[in-house]
Amino acid sequence: MAHVELSLSEAFVPQPSAATSEPESDSFSRWSATVAEADEPCLLIDLRMIIVAVSASCCALLGLGTPSEVVNRPLLDGALRLLDFTAARAELTEQETDKIPPLLALSSGRLARGLLRVQPRISGQPDATVDAIATPVLVHGVVAGSLTFFSSV
Image (cartoon, rainbow, N blue to C red; front, side, top):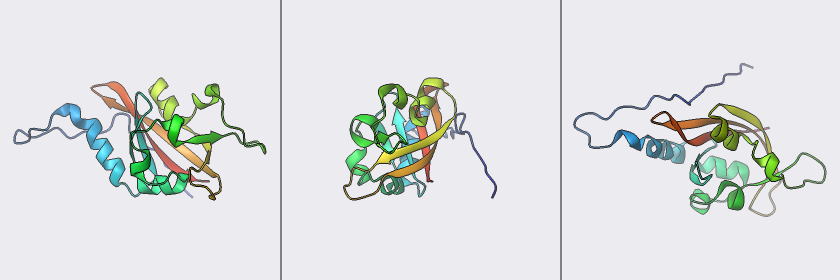
């Protein structure tokens, strides 16, 4: 099986034509619209760690409910409950959560990858173990958020 990684940190952002009144600074909004419509499990957070957009498949994979239930909520203080990989299934400490891919991409400005164990918000569903690949999203060369893709392990 081939493995391919893509970096979206310097993503192509189409420039508006002269006939379009959409400002260039609206690239984050375009990423938000793309994520919301994506078939792939992905989510976009801003610098405040607020979920700006999430795909329906990401909600299903992580047991988050529906996109409308998690958009505009804090990633960690409302949407995701992250667990360690021990038998005790303890919640991650703040030091450990700072190293998860979506937040590491924000703080480092670089591609980040790692495994996560997520306790679903919907009762009765088993924990989800996922591979997360996150990239910072830049607006005018400055980190404005991070885009994370998830894959079940």
